[in-house]
Length: 102
View 1 (tube, rainbow, N blue to C red):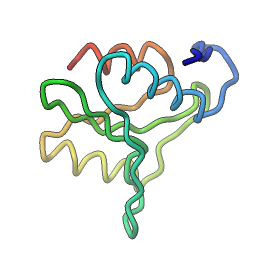
View 2 (view 1 turned 135 degrees about the horizontal axis):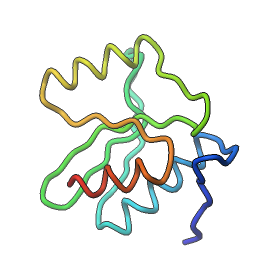
View 3 (view 1 turned 30 degrees about the vertical axis):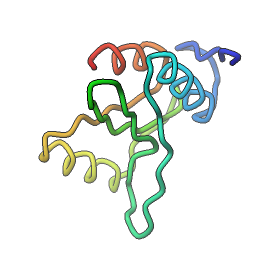
View 4 (view 1 turned 45 degrees about the horizontal axis):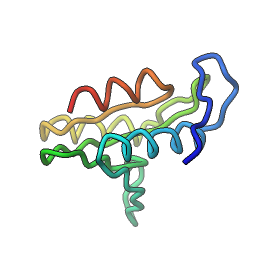
């Protein structure tokens, strides 16, 4: 599996960040599942499942300029009201923090 360069200042796309999240999650013994929900705008990009029964909802954005839509902000708030973990991932530091908090 080839690592990707997702530097904080790099001009990278969201899919590059997503690929790195998937790789790092697998290396941590988990899965990063892409889920599409019909009829629900603002649903997260990935469900991260980690050892020990940990589930995290992950929204991915490119390192520079990526912004949450109003629908995403609303859905994230609904998840947090249910005491779910919702993470915004834009760079390797965000990935490391997400996986370390498991």
